Length: 146
Length: 146
Image (cartoon, rainbow over all chains, first blue to last red; front, side):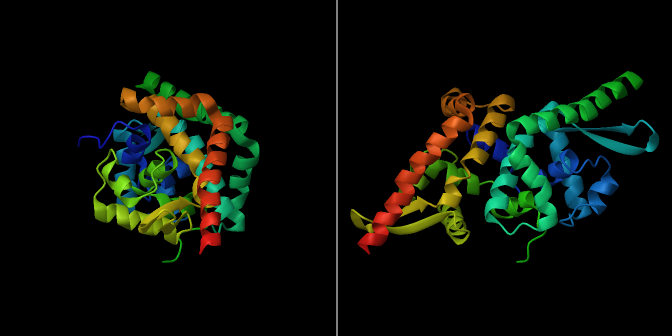
């Protein structure tokens, strides 16, 4: 499908602009989930399995996520963020900051949002560095294994 | 409709998570458009009129936008951002920064995105201060006029 315009905000929304894609990305980046089953069963919004499957495919198609065989479970597929996926953390953080200011956020969900707000870009950089170690080096190891 | 969860990222996406809402907000906040006709005809993505109308209503319903009679044109309706709407600028900025890094952004659309990236939060604060003067004081004047 041709892009609607060359505006970077529009181009980002053409990929991310729906009710689920960034929620799945949040679960992987901030919820530390890497497997389909945990992404499905631990998702607090109750994502339907076909929706999760569809969004994971979309994230892979756009280069935000990769999938490979889990190193320790040959039957299992593990999802890893790419550098491009990891760099969406500031978008998630700003959505969290805005949401906690204006929307009816539950107390248990506010703790991480508060950390993202109080820590600011310095904290986001640390989180992204950790995600790079967990997701990109893991991917590199797996490439060597193949 | 009940919210899917109390997570601030989810709550934000329940309002903003689609392909058009943030594009309309971008046109108002960064494109300096306040009237239906210019929001329609100058939108680079070619938003359909019913979609624009629907998204303006959604933004009003969620407290991100207000509508009133234009002070100088009694036949015309002018849209103003609320404080809550203005504070989405960092979300737009992060989407722009991510988009210009990874997506096929056109040269003419990249200038503003580059400013948002190079200027960082200090520049965003200045833009938001200007939007507050233009949109919130305008709204206050109008309240006094009524």
